[in-house]
Structures are given as structure tokens and as C-alpha cells.
Length: 287
Image 1: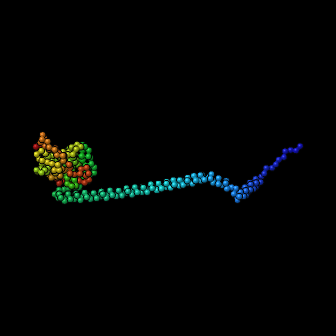
Image 2: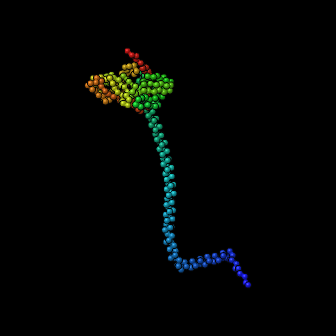
Image 3: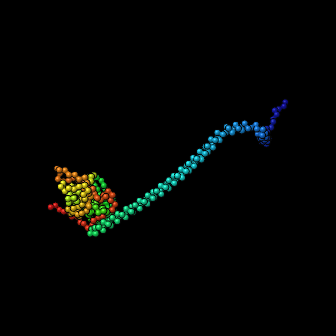
């Protein structure tokens, strides 16, 4: 009885040699077919089949390159814009400093001219620190106080010499000035008309321009007439410019004209003022 026969499996060397021979044979066959032109249709078909894929890949690579370039350019533009914005901000700040210095110089020149035109008066320059321009209170704070020799009731003038108001509250290093437009303000005035001077009173009003009151109808005041302090009452020296008469109306039934006063001092834009220190207000008692 013959037992089963066993055939040995080919070893790795044999398999490798067989694969090498197959590859060599395939290469030789490919060269032979290529020389005969037998592979041209297959090569053309392969090129046609792969052409859309190659074109898509090329376009995708171009789009990706453009996208990367776009991001890089956008970052570059953002950096340039930020640099330009910072430079613009610096130039604006420099321009503001120069304009402020120029305005300050002009203010000081006007104050010097005013002081020169009033050599008999003691004047202390002050800068405006704050403003309260509500309907019930019209006042500004200045950077001078009792330590600078100021007292309550002192007269405050604009850099052009027009009446601003009086010192109402005093502190060591600053003071609050009640403006002529404040509802609690009342100034005895003289209106310089074409027929002579006419006396009256300028009073502040809530939310409205100051009112010119108690001027007789026969005084003949007109729009544009100058309004100055009369000196009556002892609180203001005579001759300080208050403003000009506006909206003058006369009614036959009213013995006094109705008018408004446009202040000459730029009360809403005050930066620098002068305190008149040589005039002492007088509080007159009842007759």
C-alpha cells in the first residue's frame, strides 16, 4: 500500500525568481508592443480618460494657490490699513495739539489787549473747567478760587470784555460763576438807542434767551441796539457790554416794550475768562 505523496511548496527564492521573470517578460512584451504601435490606442484612451482629472487637479491647485495668495494679501492689506489708521490718528492728535495751542495763544493775546485797554482795572485770567448749561441753571466753573484772591460777587468778563456773570460759589482752588442767562440773574442795564440811553433790566429765563424788561415804550429801542450795564444797584460797574437787543415788540396796551437780549459773550463756548478784582459789589439795603 502506497501512502500519500507530499510535494514541497516552492520557497521564497523560487517565488521571487518567478515574479522577476514575469515582470521581465511583461516589460519585454510592452517594449515590443510599443515599438509595433500596438499600445498607442490604449495610451490615447488612457490620456483621454485622465485628461479631465488632470485638468481638474491643475485648476484646483491654481484655485488653492490663488486662495492662499488672497489670504496673504488680505493680511498684508489689513496690516497696511492698521498702520495708516495709526498714522492718521497721530496726525489728528498733533493737529489738535497745534490748534489748541494756536487758540490758546490767540486767547492770551486778546486777554492782553483787554488788560491793556483797561489799565485801571485789576484782572485775573482763569480757564473754564466745567459748564452746567441746563434749563434751571446756567453756570461755569473756573480754575481760580479764594487762594487767588477772588471773592463772591466779583464780575467775570469774556476775553473780549463782555459780561459773563458773577462768582456765586467760591472754593480755595476754583469757583462757580453764574451766567447772565441763568434764571436767577438780573442785571440793571442801559440800552443805547438812537434817542439816547434807556434804562431797563436784563433777566435770565428758563430755556429762553434773557429778557429785556422795564424799558419804556417811548424809548424807541430797535433790534441791534447795544445793551450795557448801567451801574445802578451797585452789583455791576457801568459800561460793561451785555449784548444786543433782539425781537423788539411794542404793544399799545403795554407801557413797556418786550425784547430779548443776545449776549455778546460766547457763553456756550467759553474757554478763558477774566475776573474783575478791583470792583467791589455793593449790596444796597432797602430804602
